[in-house]
Amino acid sequence: MRREGPRKGQRGRRPPTPAGRIRRLRRRIALLFALVSAAGLVGMAVIAVHADDSSWRAQVDADLKIRTSEFSADLRYDEQGALEYPDPKEGVYDCPPVTLFTGTGDRVTPLAAPHRPCLAVPGPALQAVAEAAGRDGDLTRTTVTAPNGHRLRLSAEPFTGPAAENADGVVVAAVDTTGNLDDHERLTVLLGVACAVLVAVSALAGRWLAGRAVRPALTALDQQEAFFADAAHDLRTPVTSMRLLAETGLRGEADGREVLRRTLRQSTRMSELVDDLLTRARLMAGAVPLDREPLRLDQLVDAVVADTPADGHRVTVRAEPVVVLADASLLRRAVANLLGNALAHGHAPGEPADVEVTVGADGTVAVDDAGPGVPPEQAKSLFERFRSGAGSSGLGLSIAAWVAHAHGGSLTVDRGSRGGARFLLRLPVQTQP
Image (tube, rainbow, N blue to C red; front, side):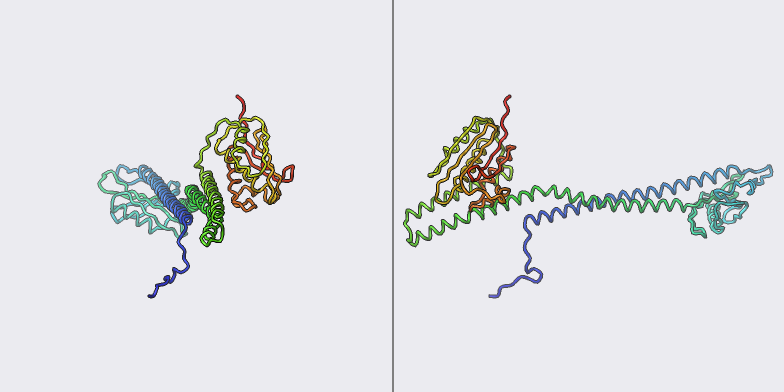
């Protein structure tokens, strides 16, 4: 039977991890945030540009309307009905330039033009807009380009004589809108640049917000992966030992009772490891609330020492009465871990341990042993997982350090007066009311 291999383009591809999918979701959220922000900003920019364009055009047309209406209002007729108009040399036609046409319909002819115009208006354009206004009998506007490239706005308004039947002529005013167009273009460019900057800022903000949104999920995944790593690392040795013991017992190569005793020790150790792993996972996840209450630290230490099997080791306790505000179960676990660490590693091979536990009135618990001590280069990393440096998991010390920090205290290690390790647990003392 032939087995179909991976298709082309799929070889070597691995499915994304949960953390990878969360990071991909983060990028998509940031992209969506940037697109929505960009759409909103572009929409507002388009509205602003359109509003500015309509505003200045409406203002220009209103000024031209005022100019033509005021000029038409100043025209007079004599008793014979002849039109009287200002002399162009008086300057009233010059700025903004006004041209007076007479006639009706399409037959209009220039009657008066500016003497010294401030603006050069093409004659054909003036004639065309005047004819359109005379033909329609209504206000007419248009935009033309002057020979120098400037954009001109023209407004033509018909006026009537005494008979008020038909338009007797047309008044045409002009204004240069080049400056308005330049200002409008500058505003458009400025809004475009501002939109680009704001889109970039919104993209960064979206990435930051998305990162904050998915950070709890990534933290939970990291804690889950750390728990799996701890479990795989710590359970491998006892499980392997129990399997070897079982195989030895099945082959009959060892005494059955001895195999059972060693199996019991390994299973006890594995049970303790599982308990430590679960405790550490709950502590790191924040699932263990602190039940703080006033308690006698010296009495708690005495109880821990009494409950810990000595197995031929010597433990001495010197305690002063002191009250701390702490979680009894967690603090008992931390002291037990420190004591167990000293009994396990605080002595030379084949010799009993000699451990001194001192409880001070300042809320400190010192655990001293006469063993080889802790190298200075390992002191800072000793309370991290997998950093015991003596063949154990290191979870007990990391749990003790976490309990100390959770209570606002600390856990440090240094060389003791007898040459061994000295672990010092500091806890805040309850102040008397």
